[in-house]
Image (cartoon, rainbow, N blue to C red; front, side, top):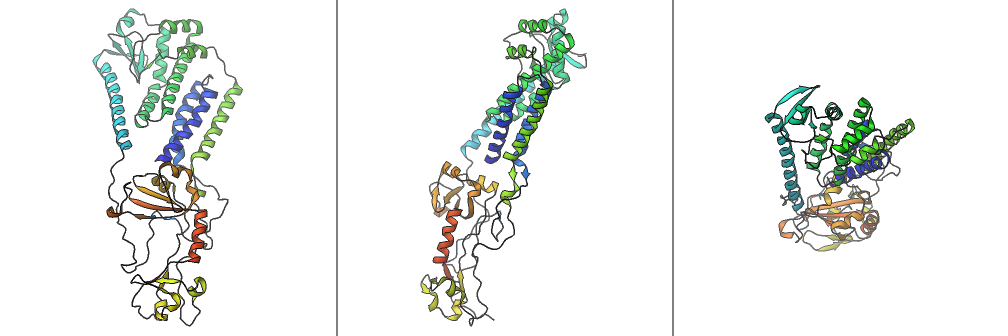
Length: 452
């Protein structure tokens, strides 16, 4: 989830910075509306996309990555066998940040529901009538009209006296006809869930401002008197608070609206805006989607030693003796004996522990390992805590091995899993150490003769 939020935020930041620099002050209001909505959609979807890219470097391995990270050893006597791994880990206490997120989200959801309820009460408690393909709601108080969905709220006294200018009706009915309330509801709902992301607050402000640009443009196209409309806007400014979810002309950036009415946009600007926007979306997909090449594992020959295969008969040359020399072998009674001192029958039951198979963690595994309440991390044998893991990239890890930490062995940090991660340099050292001093175990104390 952390990786998804990071990629989504970076994608939205890239698209929004372009909007602020190149688009906000241009008279491309319809295009800008869909650009902002599209930016939210692209930022939400792109991190989940998988783009197939041919890998430039082949990876030599015979072991395909698995979703599990705990390596299982073959059966061994109790003295040398590893402790069994439980099928399901114990439930960990939810972190404090998750509790805080739930509390704040619940408060914001409650406020969102309260604002909807207040508008619904205004609709049900006051007189209504059909008005130019909308529903007009007459309120006993208020100074300026505002809209929500297909409802137009007006002060009853001013409406009955005919004191509401025709330009204001045109402005507010444009909000209804173009369904600007749906944009507002979408961004408010997203803010309830992602309240910690400041980019969404900036997007909300940009969307509300652009809604006013669209309504102002409709007024000037219908009434053809820009100067008179500008004077009308200035005369209607009021500090009276209005419902959060409503569209109204008393938006605080009136100066920008007045300046926008006198601007002109050339066809060249329109063409460049569309072209660069498409290029930027493609760049976002390339930068923040998941590339399949990072997970690819082409079919190649083996590069790491696996479990040693025993010779078919003892009359053949002894493979282990030739490869590793006369090394010590761990016996079932925890004593050691040189390989050359074993009987021919005992040699049949010698097992050499393989090194970890080459594999790179998946995106989900890498994100999960950043949780210090669940994982204790070692990289190339050195303990890595907190943000120190950010010094490594997922693709830096070429092998990994983990084990469950039982209660009686758990450290004060309280993590549930011990993870050993290996980089390319560490893996090369592990291979050299394995060839120099392999871990050899006699798996049976009373071997049974094997048919050759």
